[in-house]
Length: 277
Image 1 (cartoon, rainbow, N blue to C red):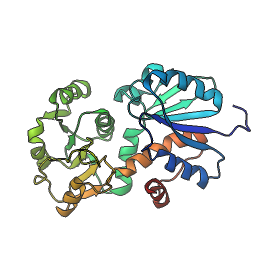
Image 2 (cartoon, rainbow, N blue to C red):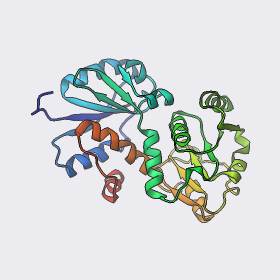
Image 3 (cartoon, rainbow, N blue to C red):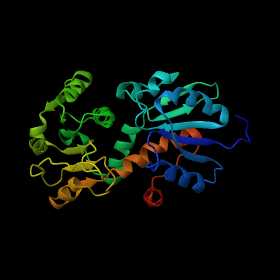
Image 4 (cartoon, helix red, strand yellow):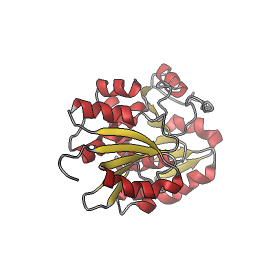
């Protein structure tokens, strides 16, 4: 790319109109005085590879990838990071100067950075984690928790076979729990994570009993609409430490922005405000 071309980036999904990523990246571009743009693109699965091969020729430096393309892009990318391979999905693509597409996954990093920023006294080694859900987001969270030293991860998913598959893949520190026992597994947990979409606006509520939670447990929900889910509100009332899901979205965007635009942005109150606008 010639030096005087304006750098472009995007988020690609279908649907994608709901994404807050354009607000976040546009805020950082403005804050750092970078003459770039970040836009949402609704791309059908059949068109994905053609679009990704064309974008670098139009001045794009990279893109974020969201549902339903996060697994599919691994078949298209020329280079894939170890963590994207382990998670089985990518959320960040870097278009390299040599024309190659480099795929990475920053979701796990974003998840841990959010906890470190908003619960600075959180100790991952303090005890087991209890995880609700076994989808793509769960995979990113599991790999990140194992990496920072969580001794054991209990997983409950409505379809047990998906949780069993995660145990096969991630190994002996994973314990699968039946969905009907999901409330009970919280009694032993030092960290509780909801990776499902239950409790999100327009989705069914999360009906897991929470009376097993105890004071001091760290409870976080990847759902950020509403910002304070029923899980977080009830956990707060019980004296748990709670962290909402918006911070994960903000922190996963940091490494991508840095790779594309050459500046490492800060996740601060102005960034949160930009995302919530």
